[in-house]
Amino acid sequence: DILLLGGSVLNEEWGRVPQELEMQLQDTLGRDIRIHNQAFPSHTSLDSRIKYGLLAEQEFDLVFVYHGINEVRFNNCPEEVFRADYSHVPYYGVIDALNSFMSKVTILPFMYQTLKQGYIESNTNNIAVPRDLPVNDQWVEMGEKIKTKEVFKRNMKALFDMTKNDGVPFLTSSFAYYVPDNYTVELFNDSTLDYRGFLSPIEVWGKPENVVMAIDAHNEVVASFSNYVDANGLIEKNGNNFEDICHFTPQGSKEFVKILVPKAVELINSNLTPSPRSLGKGIGSKQDSSFRDQE
Image 1: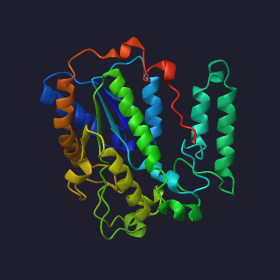
Image 2: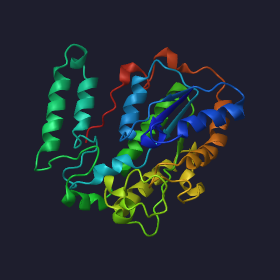
Image 3: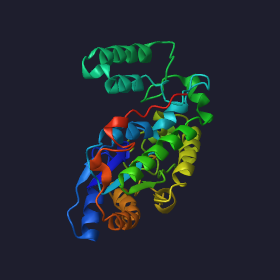
Image 4: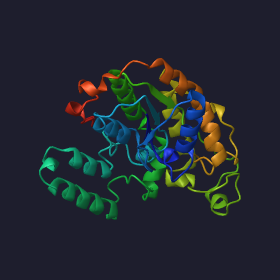
């Protein structure tokens, strides 16, 4: 039982990583593999941290966490607006409302936060950061100051600690990306770059140079974990493997998974004892599924 936590790169509608992982692990281990995919477009390390806590009653043989690009967007704001709990992104107010005690008895907190999110994100003053496309050109310029690195580190460390507490192997990887030397958004839109599918221009996350700096900063964090694979350093950077800056072609999905499988097999084989997760104790349990950090 393999749990996937990440963004669109791991989502079945954006590539073949889950399918390749299932097939390659089955071939290598000689046993049935079940992929439990909780990776969704635009989700960040905070989303994965929350989701893992909400899966407290489930048991897994491996958790693979793959993040690095989506919260790059959260840098696109003034330093005084940025919040370490990502509350400067209205979407997380909705998530907090869903996880609140009041939401167990009434839908009103969810309704209020949803309406608030819609108002803020449609306000011409642009007083918050959307979780999807950047909308404030002046704020996008401020993305050169990488504010997310320490928050990303905190969320990834929390995931690592929760899985360790549960006795579940934790695997992560540097975030693989490819930017052709001649990249411009105009050439991207004309489909004349060394990509295959041209799914998303880099500008949906911010200025290209700022996006690269932020991914590199996040990759420094990921490299600090022992159960880490350097996919970004090992995968060949070309259009055979990349549809755009980060989404893989079918061939790229296969190559990416080939990089992961040896470490995944090692971790699965080394974890033959029953997981304590079902005991419902520790920071991975429902008793402690609220993971928001206050600034």
